[in-house]
Length: 187
Length: 187
Image (cartoon, rainbow over all chains, first blue to last red; front, side, top):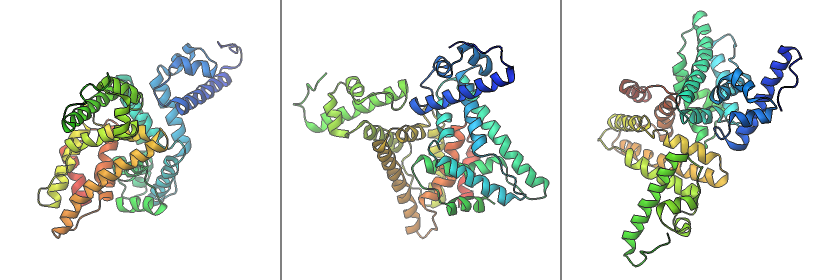
C-alpha cells in the first residue's frame, strides 16, 4: 500500500504511521528474530512506503533502536520515590519484572543483533546504551541534589543490571530478595 | 560425502570427525550466526553423514554447546595459582581477553540463540551454564580447602563475569584496572 491518506492532518497521520511501523517491527521480531527482516518487509506490514520508513528513521538499525527504547521507556520509566534506596529498589524490581517477562531479553537480543551488522549497528547500539545511561544518571543526580551519596550509572549497570540480565539469559530465577539484595549490596 | 574411512582405527577417525565437525560449526557460525544452519549443512561441510552427527551429538543444540564448551575450555581453563586472589585475577583477565577478542561474545550469542529455539535449546543452555559453573566452583573449592574464605560461583558470576559481559555487549572498554577492581571489590 502506498500513502493514500496524505490529506489528513500531519500529527494524526504521523502518530498513526509511527504506531503501525512499531507494531510491524514488534511482530517481525517475534516471528523471525532481530535482523532477519528488511525495511521493505516492515513497510509492507505497516502499510506504508519504504521511503516513509527511511525518511523518518534513516535505517533499520535506527528503527529497531527506536522501537526498543520506546518499549523500555514504557516498561521501566525511571522512578522518583524521593529517596535513593526507594528509587533503586523500584527500578531494579521493574527491570526484573520486565526481563523475566515474555520478551524479556529484548535489550540483550537487540544489542547482540546490532553488534553483528557493522558500523551502523554499533552506532545504534551505542545510542541505545547512552540514552538509557542518561536516564539512569538523571535519577541518580536527583539523589545527589537531595544530599544523598549516590553511585554512578555504571555502578548500577555493573552490580544491579548486569547480574540480573546474565542470570535471566542463563535461565536462573530472580527472586525479590535477590533483587533487593543486589541494591543493598551496592549501596 | 559418506564415510569412506570406516576401516581406520576408531580413535583416530573419531578425533578427526570431531575436529572436522567442530570446524564446520565454527565456520557456519561465523558466516551465518547461531541457529541459521542445519545439521545437514554441518555434515556436508565436514564431509560426514548426517547420521554421524546425530549419533554422536544427538541434536544441533547439543553440538553447538559442545563446540562452545570446547572453545571456552581452551580459551579460559581454570587457573591454579595457589591462592584465591591470584586465581580470580588470572581468571578474570583471561575472560576479559577472550570476550574482547574477535568472537568474544560467543557465550552470550550462544545463550541468546539457545534461549530462542524451544525446550531442547533451553536444556543445552542449562548444560552449558552448569558445566561452566561446576568448573568455576571447583576452583573456589580449592581455596576453601586451603583455608581461604571463598565466594561461591554465583557471586563470581554476578559481580565479575556479568559486568564484563554486559560492558562488552554494550561496547564499553575493559581496562586491566577495571577487571582487577571487580575482583578486589568482590573479595
